[in-house]
Image (cartoon, rainbow, N blue to C red; front, side, top):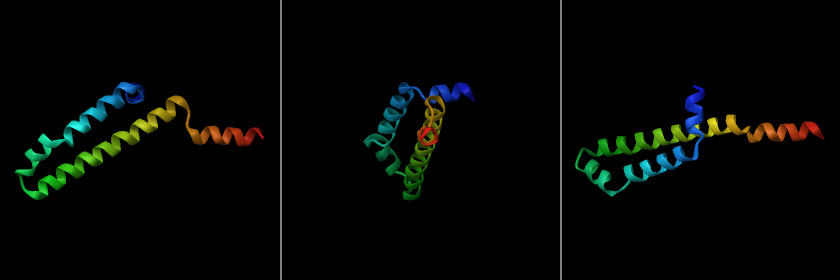
Length: 81
């Protein structure tokens, strides 16, 4: 689990995921999906969106655990007053 957290918190992973989603939501893939049933196109777009949101969520969690969460930093500042 620690290995996955380290991978997700790297800048290269974020760049790779960004480029992969630009390609998957780009013209050639959408026209390939357009030749299918409209329900398939909806499911394709919804599943890609849901997977992307899930990946971003886990990236945020791993980044927060690696660098300390902002909420924890605020609580520490309030306790020091």
